[in-house]
Length: 205
Image (cartoon, rainbow, N blue to C red; front, side):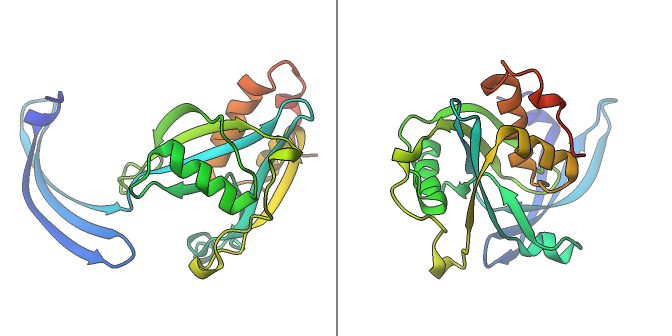
């Protein structure tokens, strides 16, 4: 039993929307640190768990990212075109299976040796999704298609190959604003390209 199981009492759960994903309103009682009970209400957005992966070439010191339109960013004042690491929802697949398929769909690269580096809740205040983070090496021979995503699902993805130097500088410039991608690039700077001490110091000019 989790350490919080005796601190949470679910009172009522209402499904507010079950269209693209599931939005619920939950009323619950929570026992605070001082022992008192407090009734709270929260909405949770359940879209399932997902996986993301950074393709990197340690010899050429490059990474593969994508660029695509994201409506939520657009309606929040951004131009909407976000640079990201490939990612996808697991649905019924394992994280490893799903990310291999997603990377090939999005980028055209077929990878076998994927390595999980960590897991994270990306927006735990409202979204239930847990994301599995992977890295994998690639080279030119691994590219078996053009990528671009699945048109019938509305995907229109551009594939980008960048030096790790440029990708890190783009974070500082505000050109890369996607959270999962920033996390993977910072992991790469610390662990995959750590022998070059200048990489992490290079910022947007």
